Length: 223
Image 1 (tube, rainbow, N blue to C red):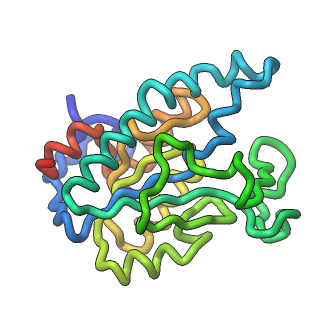
Image 2: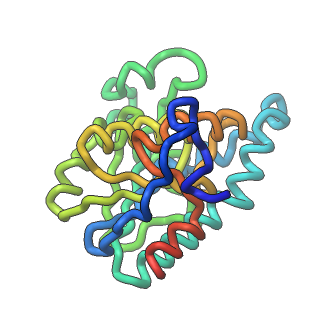
């Protein structure tokens, strides 16, 4: 068991095992998507507490510590750490994409300066790190991140964040379409349920990205 054989969909059941990726530190960045205060408050509502408690538990016990570990490792070795968050630039949210204006779960009115839209304190960007604010799911579509990565000479993007089946997946697909090599860290992501998380990893693995654990990535990077 390991990243070379795990998270295989129907399409890749018999495919050969991939080679270890070649990750030049100067061409490899860590990008974290949407780990913001508002999502850590989902279980505060007594009506929603039971539904969201498993997600909050995974975030506190697995995802946030994993992302902290990766950020520390990347920074210690002079590798770039990037951040993306979802927020609107106008207080009334007119600048949001249609997917963020529809009623229901995806409806988000997060003015950029509100406390709820900020990145959680445990993962706060350090001075000089790139932070992009997006008004749609994909961090590539919703910002100038593509240009930033190209200007930095980036070829490999290590992805963490939430939600696996929404903004993480959208960003992964956008990056893959632009010919970036993408690695998604399984223990650095979460969806609303474990089933949604795992299923989305199976869908995107081996075509849009490679899915692996944080320990497997750190072993490949030797950091």
